[in-house]
Image (cartoon, rainbow, N blue to C red; front, side):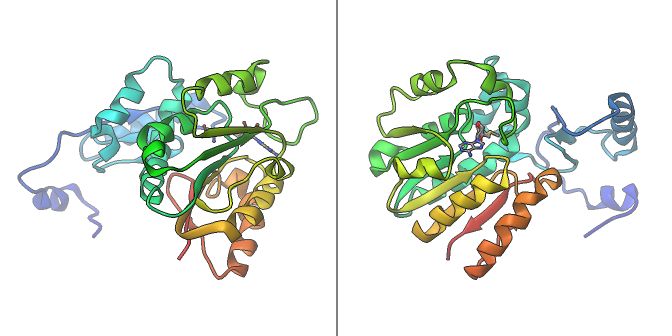
Length: 268
Ligand SMILES: C[S@@+](CC[C@H](N)C(=O)[O-])C[C@H]1O[C@@H](n2cnc3c(N)ncnc32)[C@H](O)[C@@H]1O
């Protein structure tokens, strides 16, 4: 139901509501930060609650939402942890979605894979939320762990660390069920790849390796298994959507675009 004026909305207000939560973080693809700041101020002033329930991060600007993850101690700790970067904190809604489905897929047959694990930020949360030892699954992490002039993949801050691969190995050293495979996807999948997959996170910001990965993941994805495509809904990465959709459709499936910019596929 949509109300165009505040008086109707207020008349609808139930007696009991949660504490309002406000969150502001990094947004991307902005060329005039001054104008953006001004626009956000005007937006807040225009809202029924002056922005008390506003969420503005990771290119999601919304209000009058419960923001359940901001009420969850696990996610509050991520925001409070000074070791996490501003971007890592700003993509919290994405992480919340991903962890929800990772926990759900833990009950499905097969292992977990992340294609494009970068520094292991998301994977470090998956290993906290999913009890791999108890469920007897492995978690395969793939990445190039480097960037050189002329490379096709996006240059990210983590690539500037010359010991990127060693540091990711050290990050997961106490998790024996984690396997780290260095090299270019899809060729590197020949080094080590599970026979069955319960959960896949595909996040390489480029259509070529993502197509190669999907072609290997889809045939071994278990019924009820989940794929999260990190970049599927981002217009700047729409080459990925254009490349992935025909493969998915050929298999009689459809990816759901989420407001976080992720794509979700649950295999029937
Ligand atoms: C956005 S980052 C991944 C972030 C990570 N999934 C997370 O949530 O913490 C994208 C990663 O994909 C990797 N990548 C890009 N092309 C690749 C390829 N062909 N093979 C393996 N990794 C690739 C990059 O090195 C980069 O680390």
